Amino acid sequence: MSVILALTVSFCLTVTHAWLGSFVLSKTSSPLLTKEVIQTMQVGDIERYFQEADRYVEEVIESFTDTFDELIEKEPSWKANGQVIGKTPRQLLIHSITHEFHHKGQIVAMLRLLNHTPENTDILVLE
Image (cartoon, rainbow, N blue to C red; front, side):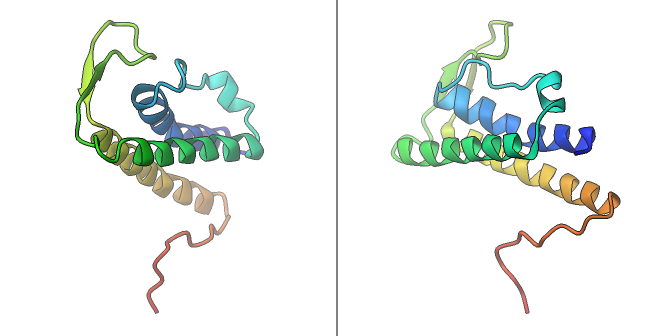
């Protein structure tokens, strides 16, 4: 797998792991992957990373249904500057989804540049 493609795919999910998995759910204190780890990732590793991100999304939706707009204020575990950040689960879920779709477009473009035709992943098909 192209290193640039692997970096983009893993970075696509880093936001979900950091903001949802770490900040909202407190499931991990080190959500960011190192460049060295990313460079050795295989397709199976990336699939597991996606599956974990999907579990974070599901858990945020299930756990914060009644408190989706309540502010969470704390220092992100991956920042060492002591700055407290205040965001709601809704804001961070929407940010994660937007971030993933932004990078999905980049990944599709990269695959096409590498002479691969990606499958259509849109759930709505217009005839």
